[in-house]
Amino acid sequence: MKHREFRETVRRELGGTATQMAADLAIAAVTRAIADGLQEDGEVKLAGFGSFRIQRRKARRLTLPHSGAAMQLPERSVLRFTPAPLKEKVDRKQKYTQG
Image (cartoon, rainbow, N blue to C red; front, side, top):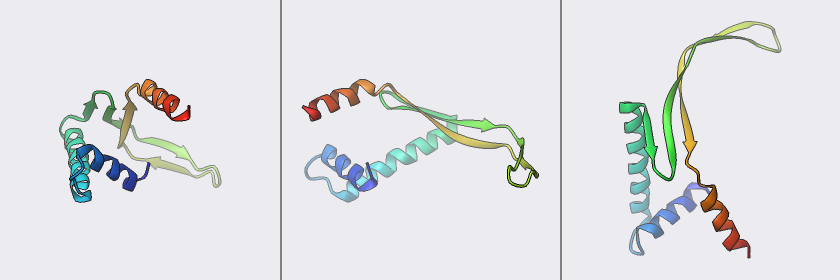
């Protein structure tokens, strides 16, 4: 699903009179809330959707395969997402749309 399709789905869920701007504002608000939660707590859990968390990766040394040169990667933070069990919802949706 691309952003345009996602925005249209959100607009429909907001109600028939909602505009594309309202859908964009809703998407931006959710994204901002997730970013703020990650910044404050390092983790955001959304029931039925999944959880986002910031994970620290230690500094490490690696060797470049083409030259054999050693390189040091600094410590960094990465974003991890763990989806909630949506399999039943996806399977149910596919079952109804296929037949």
